[in-house]
Image (cartoon, rainbow, N blue to C red; front, top):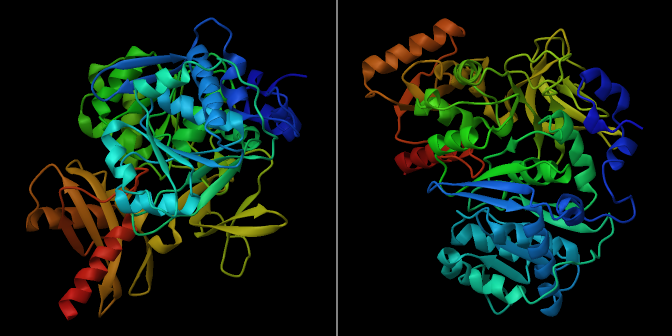
Length: 525
C-alpha cells in the first residue's frame, strides 16, 4: 500500500486519505499507542539526527537530536515512577523550548501521566486558575519563574514545584536511557489550554494518544509536511498550533522541526530561517505581519517551498509582502483546539489552486457548510455561519464565512465581531484588512461602539508609523470608504502604541470592547 507521505496531490488526498491510511504511518494501533514513542523513540537510531532546532532570542542556536531527547525522556519517565507519580496524574511544565521541555513533555507521556504545557508569560492569576483546574502533581519550571510557580502552591493542592536546571538533569541521569511505554491509544496524553485572559479560564481540551493519528490530516494537508522537509514553527508549544502542528506532527513523521525560544523578534526569526535552510514554515498571521513591518526581509535568503498560517486571516498587504519576499503562496489552515483543523489549502499540491485570503477546502472526510439563520445553505458570496458536520448533526464554529462559486471558504470574522450600524452589517476583519493596506498603518483593531443615532459605529485602534492627528484620521476614513463602501469606515479612530493580544498573538477584540465598556460606565458614573 502506498503511504500517504509519498503522495502530494489534491486528487490523491481525496482518493487515498482514510483513517486506515493514517494508522499505517505509525507503529502503534487502535489498542496500543504512545505519542512519545511515535514522535521520538522510534526515530532515535543512534545517528544523532536532529529532531528540534531552537532559535533563541539572544542569538544562540540549540540543536537537539532524537537520540538525546529519547534518552532524557526515558530517564525522566523512570524518575517519575520513582517519585510515585501514577498514570493519569498531571505533570505541568512552564518552560521555553529547551532540552528540559522536550524531556518533560515526552517523558511524562511515556509513563501514562498527562502532560500539561503552560505559557511562560502567564501571570500569577492565570497560572493559579490553570493549576486549580488541572490539579497537577508536579509543576516544572525554570529558575526565573520558580517564585511565581511557588505562589500557586496551597495546602489543598499539594503542588510540588521542580526547577528544570542542570541539577534535575543530573538527578535523572542515573536512570536507564530506555523505557517501555505504559499507555493505550485511548489514554489521555495532553491537557491543552486555549488562549484567554487572566480573568477567564478557557476549558482544557483533553487529548488522547490516538489524537496524534487524526492530527496527520492537518500535517499532510494543512502544513504539507513530508519527509525531507526542513520545517519551522515559531508559535509557542504551550498553544495548540505550536505543540500539535509545530512539534508533534513533524516529529511524528520523523521530520526535523524548528521553534523559537524567548521574546519574539522577527529579524532573529528570519536569520534562523536563512541559517537552517527552512523549506516549510507554519506560523501565525502575526508572525508574517511582524516580518513585513521589520523592513529587514531583504537582508536574508529564503528557501521556502511551502508556507502556511493559522489563527486569523492575513491582511492583503501582508499577503503581498509574502509573495514578494518569499516567492511562495501562503496557505491558510482553519480550525480550533476543540475541533482540530478542518479547512486547508493543501500546500505542495500542484493540482490545487491557492486563492489569496481563502481558507481553502475541507480536509478529507470533513463536511462544512455556510448556513443562514434558518439552517439553509447560503449562496456564493453570501455571509453566514460556518457549520461543521460532526457526530450526525451540524455544530457551529462560532465563525462567520462565505463560499465562492468554486467551493472555497472565506473567513468573515467571529460571530461577535460583526458590527451593525444604522441597519448596515459590517465585518471588523474586512475593515481591518483594508486599513492595513495603508502604508502608515502597522497594526489595527476594529470594534463596534455604542452610538445613540446609529446603534453602533465603527471604532478603529491604530498603531502607526506617523503621528496621529485629524488629518491622518480623515485620510484613513477616506482610504477605507473608497475601497469598501461609503458606509464602511471607522467613524472613530484612536491611535495607540500597541494593541492587546491574546497569548497566541491575535488582536484581542474582546479586550478592546471591554475597555470601551468600562470607559463608558465610568463616564456615566
